[in-house]
Amino acid sequence: MMCCWEIVCVRKKLLYSWWLKIGTRVMVLKLLLDEMYAGLKEYFETLGWNVTTAQDAGLKGAKDKEVVDYARENGMLLITQDQKPADLADLTGVKYLLISNAMIAKIADARIREKYPQLKPE
Image (cartoon, rainbow, N blue to C red; front, top):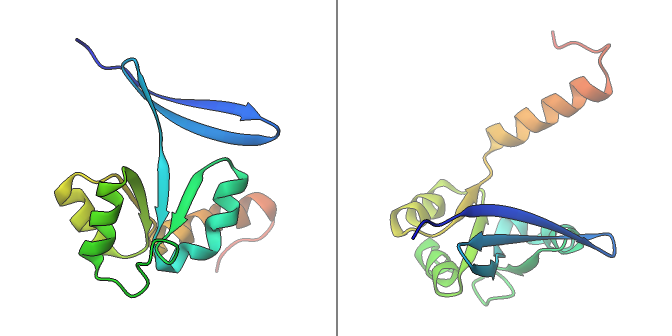
């Protein structure tokens, strides 16, 4: 049997919910924000995500492996800025998103150039 992967966006009351559809089974994708991204929880919730922070899960100051294990045990996608938990997630098959400083710089650069096209870097 062939599996079909697709991300479906559902708009409801100005909120967006993302669903991961695997074959005929639909699962809600939950996010686990590593400690440094706890401040983004309300933003993701506003966009329709089901979000837990490391602090909410009692993982403040926990070892990286414990955070990754929690994400795996609870079927969550881990969002982190640290390479080590991203590597551990990758090794154990846990879904993750590594947001590096380079990624942030590229996004900021693109936005600056878009908003202020007359400005050029030296």
